[in-house]
Image 1 (cartoon, rainbow, N blue to C red):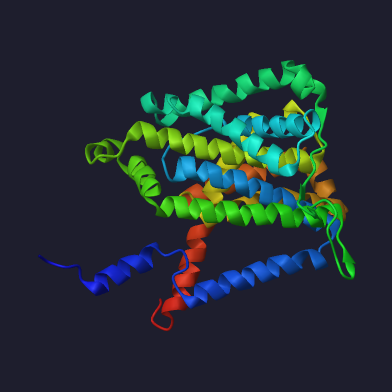
Image 2 (image 1 turned 120 degrees about the horizontal axis):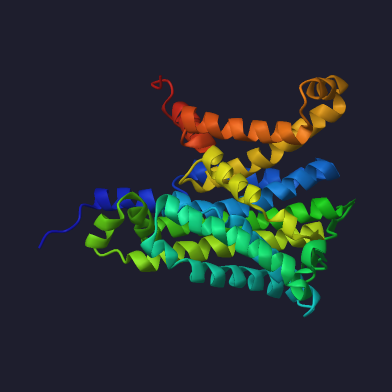
Length: 363
């Protein structure tokens, strides 16, 4: 009877380990410490942008699990965000439930909708599946606008969702010598959840279900031939993706304190497609990079145009507004990344890391 080569076993163990070296552990520890210190020097405006970027990162990770790792194209992400937002608002407001109830309830509502939509992926793929999920956005819009007892209709609804976990209230954190504002406090809540979701997603894609999902993405018929259950893993991908999107929607509603149907449109779905394209399709940390990038760029354009009158004058002369400029830049970025760097910012970072790792032999 032959035995496995210990060296090969060790090498495989290194490949599937989450933190492969002490340097990686140190890097993560440093990153967490830096993130924990950021709110001390942040203005409310900067914290506000960071909170929106973190919420977007959670939903983008969910979409990347579906599209990047399973190959199921979806244009319905905005619908799941809306489901989560309204569920969180209703459960926390009407039923007076705490954070540890309304957030999982929102994720569960999204997962149930994903479970209903998931079977369509068994018979459809590519553009046909995209059209079905696109239709979901319009169906959701109709429901959001007409189910007035829950959503408030086109007028929207106020959200009074508490964010207290035990004795810690993430709407008004304080430490000795420092009282954080609401924006700074939410920064901690949202980015702690981003870290937990990213670790969860990373572990999923490293596990047997994750490898099966990637096999479905690459060659679904071949995967089925070697024993991968297509129905199970396609539906699982939709359930995970929609649950994370709904969780992000609930956090968005809680932070905004008011939501309306106009915030969950097709443009929002396209924005999330852009996030995973710019960040890196099939890369968990790429989802976070893309979310931060896409969320920050419009704010930078608004800041520059507000600070420099010459920019606004130039936009007036060419018949553009700041909003239309944002849309143009948004579309241009998608085209540039698809043409010049299809694997996104994540691939750029991986090349930089490889360069320094192999220096002086890199070229």
